[in-house]
Image 1 (cartoon, one colour):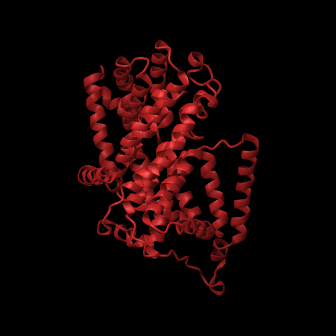
Image 2: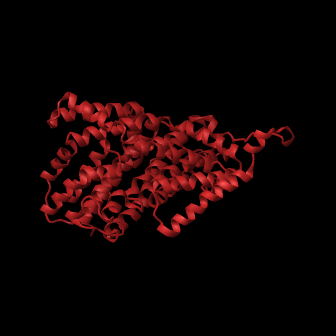
Image 3: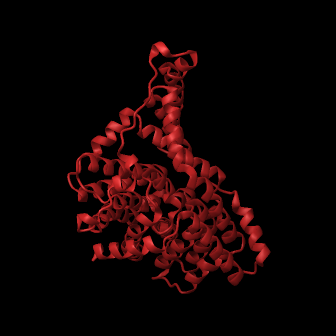
Length: 449
């Protein structure tokens, strides 16, 4: 049944799923029209809301570009590549390869969402490459989908925006709900159980969707032959080096700046504990990459190669920021959330909170941003119904991560690294979304917060 679903949704996505850039533009049109229909904003008001939010994600876009290029530079260094290659050679069959990619992506996502994106992408690419070199046929689009599917559980992990925010002193809802420790959200029985279940169920779902006939497989070579070529570093003979060449190939320069960066990384973790965020992840990746690439020019080349995958992020993030601007400034988020609150009762509220957050996430694909605009609405409803505030927080978090499987926003980095198209993975991730949605609904309905 799951394989049949995978085939059906894959065919649908390949036929109907546009390029992520077109998806962002179409979503802009939909948001604009909904704003005109359901809010008091006029045609020009919506355009002003659109521009008002258009540049709101510029810092975040730069962070995403950096995690892509620094992650690529680190992964292509000899020492890390050998480790990834060793891990990628473990599976002897396609089923084991799919499980490995999804599982490692899930583990990394629970540690940090940015880490999950890059690990899932790199594992999918390297496992596909290893399979090709060992003559093990693997359906590469499904490996890419598995790498992205592991990202579904990020908001259950240590970098979960909403639960971490409400555990912070002086957060914007502190007067209404106080400080909610992570023991009641991230480390609650409900979240621990659901995290563990999904960590294993997601890889199994991906395995079950594998095409039965090997003739239907699209290998990594079919997608892009360059992905299986061995990367060679061009080195200049020492006797032909001029002063500039010697500086560019100096391991001493890389060692000095790399060690300086790592000194701060050590200081950060000693003084702040294991508090991962995009800034410290990027900083760590950057200076480890400089050290592991050994020379400045090697690092420059590795970054230049990784930067080729940033085009989608650079262009599309402003469009999503514009969509967020229209959603929040017109009041459309409050209206959508209100629809679900209106039909909720004490038993169905957590489920409808989850579903409403999944819908809002399509338009506001940012965990922290979504909580800022939807959180107050859901909290007020939960207080009115005298329901669990921690469970409400996690239900919003689950919805935010869940519909990422349909929303290609977060897949841009993975698509750049794997060189797959959104339509080649979204059909599979939609099946993951549907089946995990059932599990999450049951969890928020019946598990203790």
